[in-house]
Length: 336
Ligand code: NAD
Ligand code: UD1
Image 1 (cartoon, helix red, strand yellow):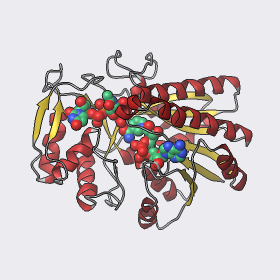
Image 2 (cartoon, rainbow, N blue to C red):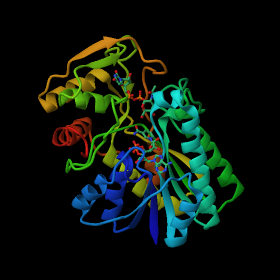
Image 3 (cartoon, rainbow, N blue to C red):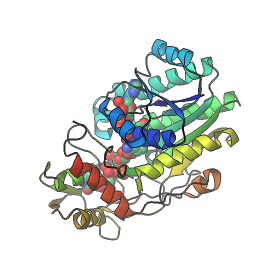
Image 4 (cartoon, protein in one colour):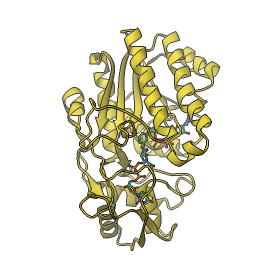
């Protein structure tokens, strides 16, 4: 039996593949390389001394997806494939709805056609919208403030409807908080295209000298030091959460949303100072006005993941930042 990993050459997908290979699972990656490269496959091989089957294909391509299911005996799918840049999603919303929503519907249809009804889906804490107080728990109302967030919410709602229509489906909707860090080998990590949107890759590129200065988006929030607070989680912890979700899928009936976060909040300036201490590099920064759509504080109630999956995050902030720095300093230009 094999596992299909869509988007498996991406940041979170590649770390999850490493954890799954350690369990001796047969892995088939489908990725269209829109935001990744096959260079990551050599790195995965170096870390695990195992190889995967890689198929360059788009999840929107029904025939290609049918071929994957025809040629392989797949029993579960971990679905990472998607576009994820919030700003870009407002500029080209139709591309996001097509790629993320239509692509997911095509994938789910092909899964149903081949009788594969076990799914782990990459959702996001973004589905909690702007109005819920932290700690965020899975019973809270959901909403979205941008097209990217809408795609995650729509896919979740499609999965709830699908699971209610057919009780054979077992679906874990994993709502990630802020994944950072990298594999401890320094061989794989986050490799954003162009100027990073997210805090950690931006800070890492300032530390390594690729970018001159961080802009801190607001220091007048009601938080410990006025800067935004988020729940940063090590990508390897996140990857292990997928392994647990796959192990427990047979016990999951229907579609269940599950937060993957640490339950702790860290401010922008706490990140900057910890990064500076660990890397020994200066991180010049300037405070600028708040970024539209940001809220003061976001962190998880991670108790469902603990009770349902037997999972909780293990890595602390300093390990997350050490691993981010090792990856960034060993690979200043990503995988190239
Ligand atoms: P990533 O961009 O590194 O990985 C996504 C992968 O999907 C890439 O390799 C890309 O080439 C591939 N892909 C995109 N569209 C595709 C398509 N139509 N067909 C086949 N492959 C396609 O992103 P990531 O950070 O690893 O995120 C993985 C998933 O987790 C995404 O769905 C993302 O929305 C979700 N997520 C990410 C974060 C985060 O902060 N990184 C937070 C919450 C949720
Ligand atoms: C962002 C997205 C969210 C997505 C998440 C993970 C927005 C509005 N939200 O969330 O939908 O799910 O990434 O991909 O884009 N910051 C700076 N300077 C920077 C970058 C960030 O000060 O250059 C601050 C932000 O204001 C925030 C914190 O750092 O307080 C974290 O930002 P970021 O990494 O972008 O994550 P989120 O805001 O949680």
